[in-house]
Every structure is written in C-alpha cells, then in structure tokens.
Length: 151
Image 1 (spheres, one colour):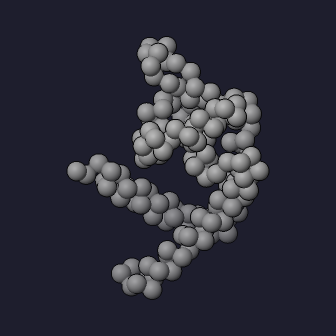
Image 2: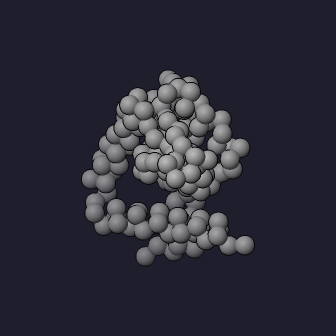
C-alpha cells in the first residue's frame, strides 16, 4: 500500500507527471515550431476542435486566461488562415471560432501524434492503470475548477 502523504511518493508523482507531459507535448511542439507557433496556439486549436463554433468568451473560460493574453496568439492563428472568426447570427458582436481546411489539418496532425503516444502508453499500462490515471486527472481538474469558482 502506498503512503500517499509521503513526500517521496508525491515527488515521484510530480516527476512522472512532468516528464510524461514533456513526452506528450514534444512532437506537437516540434510541429508547431516549424510554423512559428507554440503550445498556447496548440491549446487554442485543441478547444476549437473540441467545441466547433465556440465563442471567444467560451474559449477564454476554457483556457482560464484574460482577453489580453488570448488576443495575440488567436490573431496569429487567424492571420495565418488556420482559424476563422465569424459573427454569430443572433449577435453580431459575438465572434464564433472555427477552422479553415489548413487549420483542421494541423490540429488533426497534432492530435494524431498525442493519440498515438497515449495509445501506446495505455496498452503498456493496462486498463486498470488507465482508469486510475483518468481518475487522478479528473480529480486534478475538479481541484482546478473549485479554485476558479471559489471567491
């Protein structure tokens, strides 16, 4: 039985998380860098793919950043003709985001690299470990959500 309060176990978990995330992002980072883009651009592309037609305001909520922080990378994606911003039918002030054909192709390439890595890791770890990993990550998400919503 693991002592989950043991600092050595916590440090090992942090190290595994750090290096796992580094492995998870390395290939997409290379693909993005060839276009002069970075991980922040990847996060934007990820959420546009997950929620097609989302508004800029919704994207701000998912990313947990200010409008100022989003402005430059989103504008870059639009100027590179990877992302489109169109006025909503019901409110012309509301901007809805979607991909151009090139943007969709880029996002799929990034996702394919990460899915391939996850598939390999999931196969090696086994179903029970994957369930546990998902539970840990969902608990981390819940902790973040409660931090964001608490006064």
